[in-house]
Picture 1 (tube, rainbow, N blue to C red):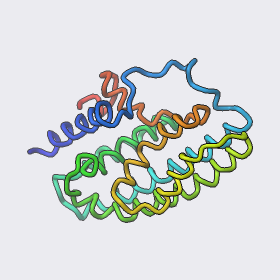
Picture 2 (picture 1 turned 120 degrees about the horizontal axis):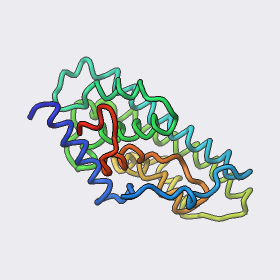
Picture 3 (picture 1 turned 90 degrees about the vertical axis):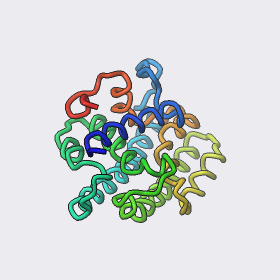
Picture 4 (picture 1 turned 180 degrees about the vertical axis):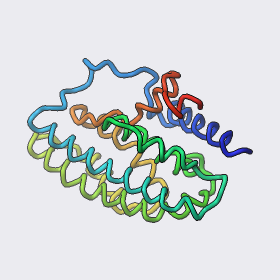
Length: 213
C-alpha cells in the first residue's frame, strides 16, 4: 500500500476508533455554555498545571519521534509532513489538539492491538516513562485541589497512583483518555479540547493537509 493511502486510512481509522470504540469524541462540539468556568480561584490554576504537564508529554513524544524518523526509512510510519504541518499551527488549543492526534497516530498500533511499527518500538519505552512521571506530578496537583475544595475522589486518586507505576501498554490509553476521565470525575476541571482536530475530521471541517484525508 502506498504511504499516502496508508496514512489516510490510518487517520480515518483512528478517528472512528475513538468515536465508536473508546468514546473519546463527541459527534458535536460542546455548547460553550455547558463548559464549566475555567477561571475560578481554585480550578483555574489546577487546570493550567494539568494542561502544562499533559502537553509536555505530547511535545516530548512527538519531538522524540521526529528525531527518530530519518533513520527508519519505513513506509509503515507516520509521514514527516504531519510534523512539519504541526510547526505551522498558531494557537495553543489548535496546536495541542493536532499534537494529541499525532500522538495517537504514533501509538495507533497499540490502539488496534497490533505489533508496534518501527517508530513506536523505539519511542514507546521513553514515552511510558514520561507518562508515568506525568501521573506522579498530576497526583500532587489534584490532591491539593481536592483538599482545598473539600472534595473526595478516592477512585480518581487510586487510578492515578496505579498509572504512576504502570508498565503495561494500556498506560498509553490511560493517558489519552485522561482529560475526559478527569472531567467526568471533576467537571470543573475542564481541560482544553484535545479532540478538536478529530472532531473537525468527523465533521468534514478540517483544513490544510488534514482536509485531504
